[in-house]
Length: 204
Image 1: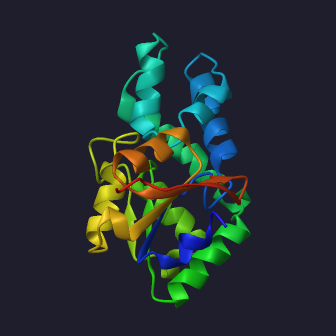
Image 2: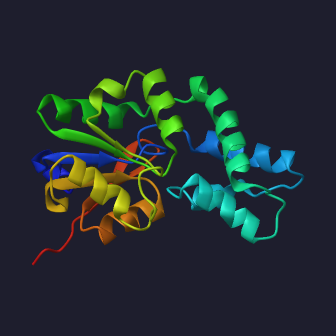
């Protein structure tokens, strides 16, 4: 079975948005609202395609297209403000979270490796009572090269005192899956709260 190896890793690194929680629709709507407040509209499909990218990278994407984003920090801060208001509506992907808890009970180290800002991550994990299950958190504030660069996952492994070979990454976004491969991590693709595929690095 393609997922049978998942119980052999010493560390697991989970993306947050779209992997552990069903938050991408709320991120997309927040980006759409802040764009509308600045006098333009966006296709939320673009936000889904950029799943895993940092907030600043997404804001910069629209600014580079000539939209009136204005000051990047103010734009991103407003998007975060809108998103945080929706945290009570966001649901956990129960099957993925149950797997995480089971592995942690077996003394496997657990990390979050996300393109979200630290304020988003901490607020959400605390609101959903998930914080006690997480050993390491790496956000977009902790690295300068974001997904598809592997730095997020490499730092998470380093903070767990593990090598990439000892870890498995769980991701829903194309940028995140590419980041895992670029870092030398085996990875699981998650879609709608289900494990759909397993990618194993050829180490021969």
